[in-house]
Length: 185
Image (tube, helix red, strand yellow):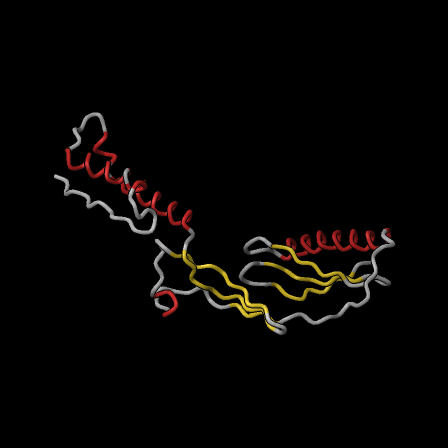
């Protein structure tokens, strides 16, 4: 017989964690997702599926002579997770998404692994891609003038050409002089 003990059911993710034991075997820990609003029957089915994984694990241990477990205990570093910066945070106030990105930063000391955030400048390639995306978006806003049943005003033609010429500007991609879109009638 395989025995199990439910250790936790996470109400947010519907993950069930359980420990499976069998006489003469080391305990096996597993977890599995349950459907939203699960029933007792679905819980038992999920545990039965996990017990199959436990049995496969125990069989693999018996078949492998190379597995040597010197200790079943140990110590791991504490983990600290900082919240994602919000627009109201002082950290993010000077952030400019055109020129910068917010990335996950891991600080690993002897006792703690901290997951935080930092603002980094974009590489030239990333910045050039951002500028090209913005340029493409601005061009799309004027695409309606390119339909065959409309005549495109000269100001819109010049504006569209100025957008297309942005990669040729001397300061590209850091110092861009964006053309001003003319008023539409």
